[in-house]
Image (cartoon, rainbow, N blue to C red; front, side, top):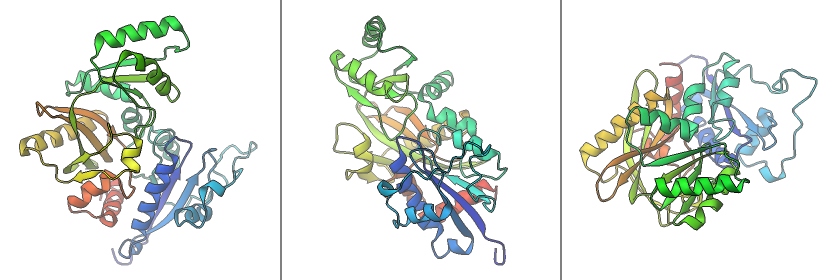
Length: 355
């Protein structure tokens, strides 16, 4: 590779999403990894920050955010948008980008929106395409496909586009939920991440408040039975061939694995997880099967439940743009599998180029 032109990575982060801050933290880690001594021989990085108003900042301002020269809470709206312009990216210099690396967690990123936009640039990107992203983000669609494929999941009920301001609708939903599922329950927005909008419900009186909390994020809601489980996770990288990482387990002191547990509390991470080798193989097999089912490739993290008393494996969900923060499981899984963060980001570029 000596003498080859360096590849320019277009790192996109922030975004109009309830996971804005997580995206910034992930981007800082990835930016540092691309700027390691060995990676600087192969790559340059152009950063593109999207603020909470949806405005794109130029690469100079964006890089200053990543190196903490600009604080987000002091950053004013940039006014990049010009109503007279057809292309809202006219003010952004992205033509020298060779490969896109979108790190937009949640809405307008992980749901495939950014992938659709970037497709028009005719440049490769790190991660999966529009379909896999959209299906991986939408819990109801994902679980419907997995049900048809007989992939084991906890019992669930989907609630789609009901008006929670209607008392009759609320009464009907209460009846349906309590007759179909056993407590405790988890009520989730169909489209969200980092456990935002999720509530644990232990009795009937808590259901409506949990539904309303989820409804604020998405009118399509998922209600799942809560079991006594271990939280098990597996990383995926690859394109035509998918590779699985070591299996990891997260143990947390909170009642359940909520947003604070993921990003602010000190959890116990065990990699490899202390599980039966045959169960580990089953998890890796289902991880690949589920990603193939949704056309997910590039990189992803597949989350499982392992029921404590039965050792039954249940697929929970797939994250198509998992976190890259210092406390994120995905880079830790691959470090334990032989790829440190510098090697991992370089490997993801190679995968996107089919090298």
